[in-house]
Length: 318
Image 1 (cartoon, rainbow, N blue to C red):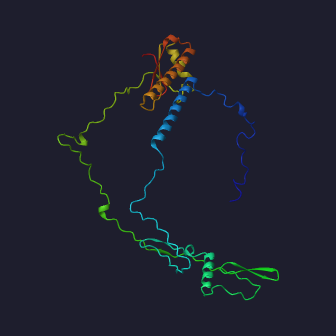
Image 2: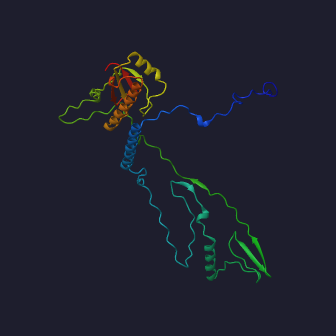
């Protein structure tokens, strides 16, 4: 806990006395930026994707559909009729409907202080005094529990607060009963697949004898030649491959070279494949310029663009 290695001086971090680096001098290498033609192609693809998103959202419609009420829902209770003026109606205690659970809020159902005052004044006119009588001419008592009574005597005003009654939590009653689900209402899981449809006069085979989907005749063979890695979605060659080009030119300085660029198509859409072929051609052109810079004759370079594949390939045979 104390002393030992913990109490000893820690070694300084490495490079603590070195000068701070100049941030403006980093990075020193030129980043791999696509050519203007490749950037234009990417911009066109983004514009088409944006317009497709707009139309897809419009075709799908809103995400908040109008949900109809459940069948058999109880109708909203109607408001009780207002009693005629001058008629005394005894308030009925609130009760819960049969088969439901909840709490009865007595405070929400109780009449307000103003309504109680008007009811007491009406009862006083009928011969039943309900208001408290004043004990002195200089006192004025306002009815209603919880209110502040003001007493005025010789110009002096004093406030006396009447203690409010204690408020308790409503009683929660649980009378709802959950009915058990009958076995007939539970869906049964079949032991096997459903029987195939039958039509009079037609022989419909079962699913076990249906032929597989026809597979397109794709060219799945690997392309020949040396693989060249390119920056994703760009026609620029990844750094660190100068030795590969040097060895190819040293072996056959005058060619021929067959450069095959791939556009990395991600779907079978015709427009996507056309864009991928253009990207493959741009990659092949960039590799051809690299070979020309190494004194390879331009007439000895043949380029080709393909939709499916990654990067590019350089071969000495077609």
